[in-house]
Amino acid sequence: MAIRRIELDVDAQKQYEVIKALVDHGGNKNRAALELGCSTRSINRHIAGLKTEGKAYFIHGNKGRVPAHALGSDVKQDLLDLYLNKYYDANFAHFTELVMEMEGIAVSESVVRKILGSADVLSPQATRRTRREYKARMEAKANAAKTKKEKAEIVSKIIAAEDAHPRRPRCSNFGEMLQMDASLHQWFGDTKTTLHLAVDDATGLIVGAFFDWEETLNGYYHVFDQILTVHGIPYSFYTDRRTVFEYRKKDTEDDTNDTFTQFGYACKQLGVTIKTTSIPQAKGRIERLNETVQSRLPVELRLAGVTTVEQANEYLPQYIAKHNARFALAYDSIPSVFEAQPSREKINMTLAVVSERTVDTGHSIRYANKYFRTVNKGGIATYFRKGTKGLVARTFDGGLYFSVEGDGIFALDEIPEHERSSKNFDFKPVPEAPRKRHIPAADHPWRRAAFVAFVKKQAHRAAACV
View 1 (cartoon, helix red, strand yellow):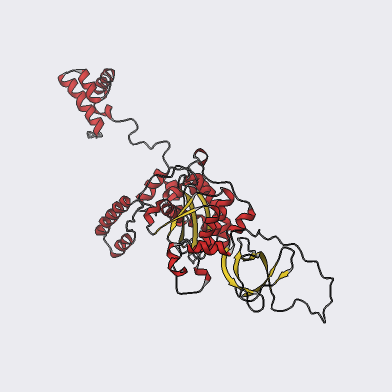
View 2 (cartoon, rainbow, N blue to C red):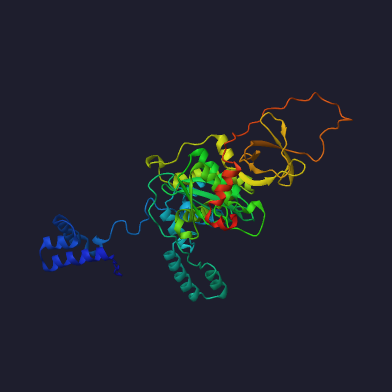
């Protein structure tokens, strides 16, 4: 009869050797208990077990058994198939949440990482150390590959390591500093779009987000509008050194390039300071947020069937709520320095695009390739002489106003290219009385003198304004 060979693990082998020495040669049971980290009662039980069962006594009873809570091979294969075919662009933590939410499979992130790792699947958000280890492991497999096709498949999986952003302490107050940035990425469909984001430094809470085709003043104004409407007036912004926030004089007369005086002037009216930097690592909070959102949001947008910018902006609140619940700190327990939310009217008036215009010979103003006439509060047209300078302000809700220093603020009505009706051939209805127009007070910050003074205070504009 063949003798069965008994193999023990390291701990069990040590127990066997210590107990066998006691049985064969005698010794101090207390010292043996101290060496094995157990009681003398356990030592007596081990001695009895060795005498009755021999070496097999030290084999653990669960050896070779499948744990009751272990996943079956079919579930593991389902998880692998789901990741490779449906959730292929999600990181492992996000994938764990998605399969629970959408597939009803409850599994831990560590189990997902083990299953996908055994199939040589690397998370898009893997750390540099994990990427280096993965690369070394895959290179070893490539060197051991028997065919060129197998080697090519392995080499294609090797991904270069990425740099991380350094961390720094959070601000102590909610609303003390909001970091803003825009991320150009293929968020949905086949065309890259830009997501404008703002995150609170103290809590990590996304306080504003908006999609646009490019990084624009309009995108940042929508983010600012969300912040003012939901939270109030923040203390400061920390942003990239972009033309939206810091203007550099260019050899052009195009008003759209003069964006510093738009966002900056809006912040000045609300008392919000702006700090800019050209170093991405200096504002690591928003940079890390961009990485997280780039990893998660495209998956969510694809699964939701989003294909247009309008659909993406409509979906954003749903994603932000989920993101904040998952990652942000509870801002209710952190002191807030947000000032009270402004009225809707003040927000519309503050988030305005302002540009200088001159009245032409037809007593009208040209703006956006159209002609407009000025109208007072009573709805009656008011005419200014040729050469009168003023500011045209397009409010956030699309209203147009003309500010003339010393004469106040007037609404602008578009002058159509053709009359809507003929005085000679069309039926003449009873003329309507001019309707009253809501026009901001004459001391509104759009006054031309105040605006020009603000522009001249900018250090980088000093030479241009002399």
